[in-house]
Length: 136
Image (cartoon, rainbow, N blue to C red; front, side):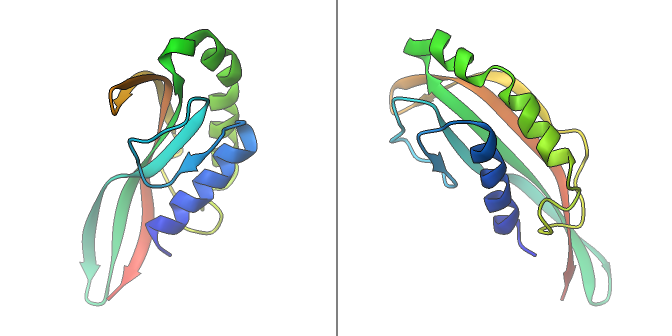
């Protein structure tokens, strides 16, 4: 199990719920002029439990954005989509068999992001405490 596999699984969930012109597992400043998603590991920590094994805990950020200049259309396209993504994530505590479990409280909020001088608006979804058992 690796956090990159979780990121890829989350990308499939986002694509299944939102009609995006593209997804970027790794953030870029060159984005689309329509709805798109950025998905990446936000932070993590490692804890040794005993000789030979430990656990890692990670957070993934999912940005689903559209151009702020077309804000009304962006929000029309996103209506109900974040709820659908959260519901789908909660259906599988192992996120497609890619982790041991995760904090069953995904959260999202309204955001504005500036990339290369262009303002985008939409939602930022956080998936926290993604737990992966490790052997050393």
